[in-house]
Image (cartoon, rainbow, N blue to C red; front, top):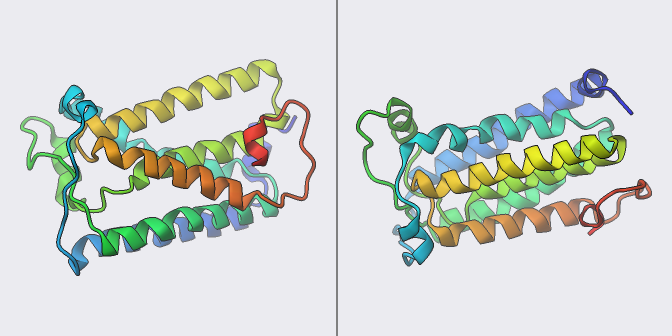
Length: 222
């Protein structure tokens, strides 16, 4: 089993390059498309789930924790091939999302202000209300967790796998719920984002050269 410190040190030049590419490749198109305005903003139907989840800006911390989860995933890789597959999968996730953001922009349901919540006000000051469908927030969370599971699962003992699964599931669930509680997304936004993430992960690893390690979950070899 490779220690966490050794894992983080491996392939560090490639990881730096991936993280820089991640920052530019996601942030620049995401925020640019919010301001293009080539097509009119649309709204989506309000579902029972949207009504059930009340607006609660206290979930903004969980929502913004995606900024920590996403860069953690590639740092856990131990081989250049894994980083290449990570970049490929991320591209497959983001490009369709950006295309929809441009051609079919959807406005999220969030309010214009949240009195007493400074962090929420900071968020809405730089993040526009567009780019709601599909939820790239949900997609990035699921894709990052799938990648982390993929590269770590075979190196962990049973307790380590259980801990990874529990922590990942709780963190991912909190992020998904926070997209609704902060009203950044409609409930309908989430499923397409999650499905895109699963498809991107599967396609990125479709022709994985390495054999399945003992105890590895079947979803890793879609």
